[in-house]
Figure 1 (cartoon, rainbow, N blue to C red):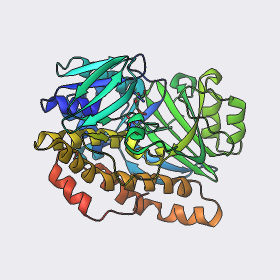
Figure 2 (cartoon, rainbow, N blue to C red; figure 1 turned 90 degrees about the vertical axis):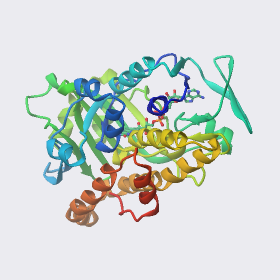
Figure 3 (spheres, rainbow, N blue to C red; figure 1 turned 90 degrees about the horizontal axis):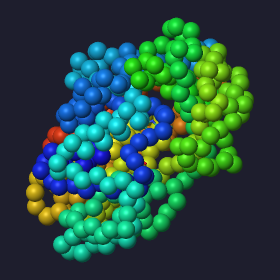
Length: 390
Ligand SMILES: Cc1cc2nc3c(=O)[nH]c(=O)nc-3n(C[C@H](O)[C@H](O)[C@H](O)COP(=O)(O)OP(=O)(O)OC[C@H]3O[C@@H](n4cnc5c(N)ncnc54)[C@H](O)[C@@H]3O)c2cc1C
């Protein structure tokens, strides 16, 4: 959707094909850092997002057992002043709603729902596909169709993503169910042996979004709507600090979801001819740096800038891929490494706690200062050194 808005802003006519019957998302939150709010604000979404998001004052990494703060960073006004754009905690439905509403009002964008894409063909002068029983033709095809991408299979053949051995429990807790001040106005990340827990407010503080990750084998369903048994969740986090256990206790058992985490290794190629990929379709990323959607949003801006620069369509798509591959691969591997770092035990965890601050500050600066509208800077970054991410 962001790619469609960026392309329309450059004067392209865009058709969006969504397999689901409507644009929407089930209940869960998402963190949006300045590198992607920069893109969303430049698309004119600042007021809409500000009206529904929660603005955290900071991010805290805490110990699973004592609750002590291992490390904290500024995510409030100081961050906004430094990078020029805010950090949001937002309900996914609110983000998708804002994007879909803006796209629906844009004359250059045609939205098709209930339109599952199949039968893709390309020739030297165009691409065609079938969606919802109708055949469409265009100058380029961008496969932004997620980790199980049909377009990716068309380009490179089927290949299953890998199960990471971790499962994420997810739920939303009404803030009114918790004592006042029990949840701080920050993004909290509790690190423990074999698991970690992230929570933060969404909907201007009305709800607390919780993601509880645990190493677990033998259960590999990937679905936003798979309900989990809250007793199993309680057992998974039985020995954890009261700050985690009370949150689980306040969850609605009927709205507690379970999600097996999959990813893919970085790809060497994202496209062929007039077809390319974007977002999880080409760089499915574990959520342990909270950057998967941010990368898809950045992709959209870079892609539009490359196509708008003119010239051969296929060459423009290869330029976009070249500008994006190194950064997204870094984040894929960094997120995967965070699964190990977050879940360390014993002496390794003590050493991690000692060194986390410095490496995290470098990583966040590298992530947040990226300007997806500045192709020269993107080119310099694609060529330059990047820190080890954490
Ligand atoms: C627990 C969890 C927490 C996360 N937290 C964060 C976070 O805080 N910040 C962040 O930046 N990222 C986060 N992420 C990652 C983020 O959710 C994904 O990276 C992001 O949703 C990827 O967006 P996408 O548009 O590429 O793919 P998707 O969101 O998967 O969207 C793909 C769309 O394509 C449609 N589709 C699929 N096949 C077809 C077809 N054949 N025809 C038509 N339509 C099709 C699907 O219906 C879907 O709407 C998190 C992920 C998880 C699992």
